[in-house]
Image 1 (cartoon, helix red, strand yellow):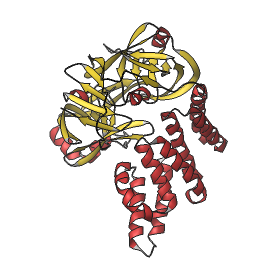
Image 2 (tube, one colour):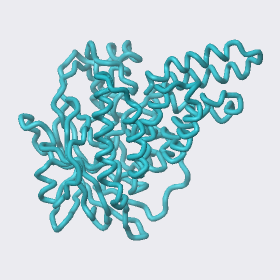
Image 3 (cartoon, one colour):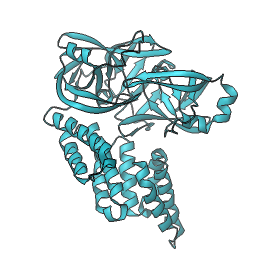
Length: 434
């Protein structure tokens, strides 16, 4: 999507450069630069002061992407409908890209009927060419997903109106830990990884699905894994419990194997609790010493957003020595790690403070990848008003790796580095309490 907008933003920047009044010129140029760089955090902060000066097509794009970034998915969809009015100015490629965002918005809010309609519109607009085949396969996969869930209930959390505690287990695995919660369905108990990096549905193996009694409702769903994309099935349950919390209508992506058969990881469980449930839990307080998560009866006072969403994936906005970092908020990752973008930004510091180059393995659905890394002994992050120290953090320095659009992954060690933290994927904040 970002690539589709490059030429568009260049057009607007060029157009406003000829404007007679410098203030609108500067405002439009700035908004275009922030969109071009996908810096929606800064854009969200600066847009209110200049929005009256921004040309309408560019403003509609900014509104749609900022709303998606802030988790206001319905608002993003309304802005995308506004964008459709500017097809002549924006071009069909941009319209197509923004309607892909509408698909993700509808998946996040479980508006499957509307999402299916969007998928059909996009399929109808695709040219009959070999180049469009990958897009066609992806859209057909999403259409199967949306159609299968259109007449089923949305995820619903039923809980007592009091502080509700959910016991957790910190389970050593590889070079870090997983946070494990126990769920029950149809009288069967199953360990789940509490995984904020698992988008849109829970992810389980076929064996776990059969044990829990998951009903398969669609086949040939394309999903992205560590080693690339693959096909899974889509399943549903009427009800699942996390302690005293009842989860109605959870959905599942069912893979033949959670990780490749040839990869042996001691302590691995083959089920991950995804963000479509975690977001519905609302505010979650993780208490390390008590080994529990608490869903408070009284939510926190309004807290400034420092979590953003991009294509259904959640990112933590934090700082290191005054520099803003964007880290994938992924509690399913056993340890935090930093990306090639981080290395590109802080190469001198990494080379001065880290050890020798090593080979590091990352695994999950789809396979295993190996990267060259250098390990920093410690990294101090500023998260909101407090700081947290992470230890032995690997930095990807692999030659030829694509320069990703984020600075790394905030894994399970981010949670355990503090005594108590609170986060909410609906209100979009992460806070260190103690």
